[in-house]
Image (tube, rainbow, N blue to C red):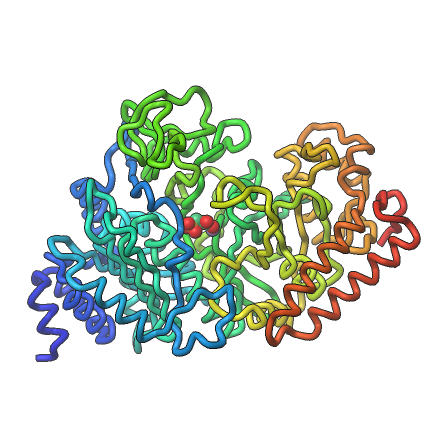
Length: 624
Ligand code: SPV
Ligand code: MN
């Protein structure tokens, strides 16, 4: 008998053993046996696509106290440890054969050293616990986008979250995971105390791009543990660059235009900069809010949501600005609320309609108003990174093409950051190359209270992907540039900025204005709106926006507002070009065309400055 089979037979009961064997995948059997051998779980559960298997996991999450029922049917709450509330950037590392020439933004560790550390930590880590073996499909099933994935975890919460967020893939795995062709995620929450990971000092997320494996240990927070989310994003960025397609940190949505024609956009924004709220705009259709795969087919660009659910930030979700989500969060149905405040069986969060209770249970345990942490800081009722996990199909605005194997044809790419003083609210790039270089690869965003550290600091975040990048920047940018090759219909590229401020520090736009920018972009894709030529791209004409403000928001749009918002800030744009230039100059192997495009933009800005000064009103700009 093969060693791995002996281990499996020794640990799996006959029912689970049969389920695993039915997959007919020796590579999978070997991996599973290895994990059992080292982690020493008490028992093993193998999940098929049958609804009763999903139910088994859901019940286990309650039984092992990783989740608890709330009053509303289907709702549960999960808490992560006090110090385990976000992605752990410091301890997330790539296993590489040599750390000598790795770029600074890729956190790397010598593979032998890293693997030995992981093996030591894994020794007996699942003792007394049940191990769940699940199979999923990244992207819609049986499509050009699909990637099979294996998740092994001792956390029923993680397995449950994945069931909400990803398509079940047991049957798919049977047909498409031969020859070891699948992503692998191995997770253990480690030793638990009050149902949360105890040893967060031993928290590790180690990524092996060679074997498409991610190990995640001593943590529960989904951004670290749900393998199919951010760990898979990292693996897929690498795979896509090798195979000539794109994996992006992007929402995907349909926007209605003239005659109810729907045009699809994908959009990259750093965390907490309006990504989910844009994709959830009332009247439009959401396909996804976080990760999109993009492929070319017969000369057109198609996108698909990697996921089938949302793991979204709950802070600030109210009935006014997020009516559709708010409604969904109150309805019966399978939802996990994490790190919110629970009072009398109901979830509360900062920014919810109405008053927040002065006591309850939260991520710090028993909570009361005024409670302080060990450092003397006030503990908020809900964590700023508190989240909800739900299926997209619970939403009234979900697009009917969510599961389409063909994906949806993309009309435009949108890049947005938090920028108080440089870019106009919406602008179209002159071309694919101009957009990828001066908008996507030049994206900067100011830090918010939602990230650790000082607020309002501008940080470079190309394509909003820097946190997840798994390959050198030059390769990633080149892959983006090359994507337009062979396309008969090249998607347009736009930048948006919801955070522009006036000199006195007040925002120049309302939260709802983003809907108008979206409708303008839709019109541009179909040449139904004109544009003015600025040194940085093509901006809207006042009359088009006036019409859209009236029809979309029932609002009057004053010319003075337009002028303030769309004045080209030449000086700030030149400063930005200088910052970006300096960053790329330090990078290795950056395509020459990037410097050419940046330098052309700088020249245009300087020429405009000579003629029209540092701040140029749109009234001086010519029609495109
Ligand atoms: C993000 O931070 O971009 C998220 C949440 O989508 S996490 O899963 O933590 O990455
Ligand atoms: Mn994200």
